[in-house]
Image (cartoon, rainbow, N blue to C red):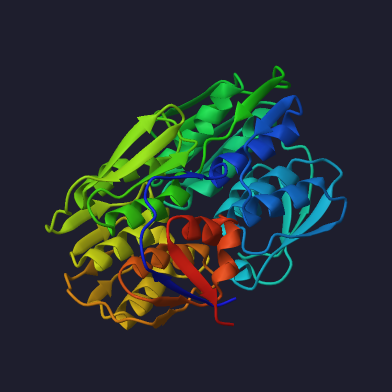
Length: 409
């Protein structure tokens, strides 16, 4: 589905309800399998979470998780611990080119039986579950935090628990802390100090309900919309917590640069464009929140201001090489942009080319990050239905705030 977007007027003072965080939901679903007395409310409606659930609840020996990187990593660790269960995990073509060797090596060090079905170091994987008895493992700290979280999630189910040594510089710390805090909510003893994570074994947990906070990454697109709107524009989003576990809640601070204020009202956030944006260069290290890099880069371009973004090395192994994708699509729109393996530099500009077709590269965040530009110029989003990976109601919610979308193919 290809969409043409345009905006005649912004519908202010809308109240949008966003589904649960994909990151929290996927972690909790793994924990629920290990501790069935755990109940979950406000699960994410994303494709990633649906794929994860299907793999967990299906008796089939082969599970296809599509583009769901989180599901691939968490399920690899989970099925490695399931004695007597054999499961082959496969995915999309892109998934079969996303590295997983670091996690597989760590699990093998613990005694796991995992085979590469095709290419060494990449999915598909054939996993023969068994009892893992070792209780210490090392893994690089500068890789995707999902590898580390995958090990943390299975740790309390192991006979002796697990001690994880993180080697070198540690990135995406908020996502490690999210996993840690969810373990704490289940009264599991877990500590993260220095370069070491220690998690004690726990055979069962008390019956309890955990309500998943709405996804802050999804909120980023509304931050962008308000930033690109006139002073006075506002939108309310539910359901959010001031003491969020999600690293992307740094949006509330970053978007002050663009004149956007965030007010917490009960379980919602109210976004208001209080003033014009700061025209100074935005310099931001996003190593702890890389998923909002695309949104921020597009916001800066839409406002005609420069930005220097760093800490982006993990973007190259996402659904697409997001740095390359941003470079290509922003250039098409008239931007002057340069990238390295972990940085993005955008020069200030005053003109945006209209009716440009944005290629999405099977990446949900490419479609959603560029949508707010419709407040400035008509724009086309190719294969726009890719948004279901994380946000099924995205285009419906865009209509609510005044971004019209017409199917052109």
